[in-house]
Image (cartoon, rainbow, N blue to C red; front, side, top):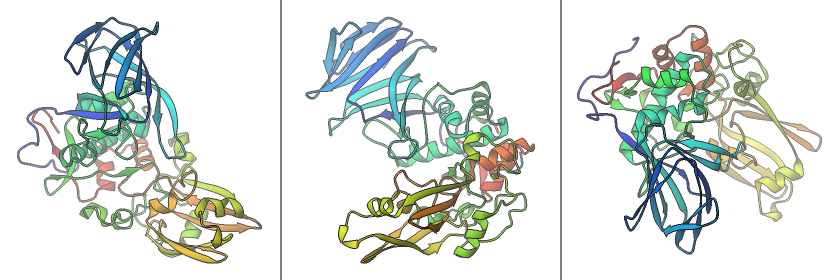
Length: 427
């Protein structure tokens, strides 16, 4: 263990449970129950449902109606609980939305375990919340966040960071609602159940059980992103209002020496993006990187002037798009203040995420430069994500060279320590 575990009393006496909202955007749910389940409604009446039962739940007129596969109405209520006494019982939910609002958005069938609370919110949205032990929850996070076939030490680093994020969310109520502690998509971290779990990803969770990262003995947010593009970003340039932990007050190049050019100047950022630097997350130097990473280290997007005009403003009086002027870049080359110039006016954009989300679909990162090609505008960019904290691609590359999970974590969170959060955990 290359950096010390935090001392003092653990946060929990035993492994905590988490309640995760997995759906709040659908009015119809199709479920398949694997194993025997019981259904209890608001009135506390209980119904036993045999294995392989198929159900359709419909949000209508302030009630959730539950139908069986023959179309027979079984029960109506604004709230239900599904539970099973079997450790192997699961629920398959069809067409679960993911990546809502992002360029990779879609739907997929998902398999979950745990206890389920399905209810109508005050906005009459049908919410689906699953309650399960923390470590089981993490087994549904790690393979979706970094890939279930990644090297074990990278998976372990991901398990520790995901656990840290979950504990911060659990204790701060950052993402909580009336009946849930966490959400399941990118605003929190991706939790998608059992579909992509692998033996290595489960082992990574088990072998790091209870471990998080901390500063000065206190749990810390363990931010991470898919691919930093070669250099990490300062937290104040991404989230100015968030806790300025020491680990996030430095920006470094993603190589063993952690040295390389600062990219605050656009001419230097352009040269960096056009180049192929020797960094962990560069697929040219690291053949172990998966395909999703290879696509994101460097990327390009092409638009017509009219497309950009329609995309960037609804104000027709501004006229045609003319240029994007960079006002501020961070040391990773990420733009966090820009001015959009049109024929008859201009406006400023603050924040790297706000800038990314002006485009449809959203840009992979705000580390880009603009090239004009006649009536076409090309954005050439680096990385995927905000660039703060751990670069998941870099973690994979480091693990492939033999670095251990604690070495990887120390590389990205230089002032952090490992901390046990419940008594049964062992570093």
